[in-house]
Length: 251
Figure (cartoon, one colour):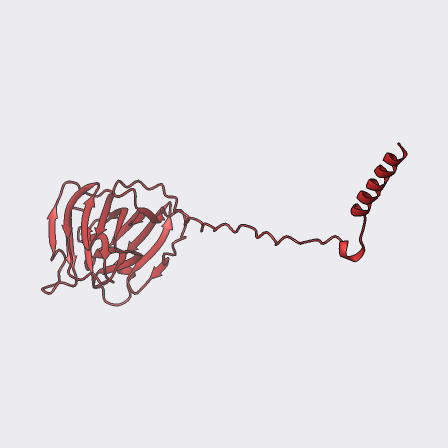
């Protein structure tokens, strides 16, 4: 029995010795784990802010609205005031852009009035303008000028007697109002507001008045993409143009 206890004691001493410290060689070695890189997620650029617009236009509603002026203010920077060289006073009043032409206010000899006010620039677009022309005279028009400045490009204009005119100022032949196309249509309201809509796509223009397509035109010169409000009055004519809204959608 004594020998068995001695053997057990010896075994315990050996086990405890093996588990004990053995100096520097047995120091705890701490191995640092490599740093964990945080996952970098790709950032999504913010969507372009859409132009909120309450103007109704049925043509290409899927295209992006890029211009919407209801003339609540002058946020689009129209040149307001009196232009004595042209006898024109421009103002924004009562939710309308008002262009008042009076030849009596024009300095120098009166030769009539013709003006193109820039709106936007685009190749494929929908343009919608609601406006009215008020005058005791009939020798005046209003509409749009496309692909040019003042005396270049293509104009689509209407008068107060139901007529429309397509004028190509880059035409190789004689330049006069309606040299590309002209006609009359009952869709054009006499002495009342009219909505002019232009659809431009792949170099071709479609012209509508109050939702009715009147004509189309494909000009030979398409190196410009300007869009302007066009107004014209003959010599001695007084006229007031009132524009309710302008909408541009771009493809």
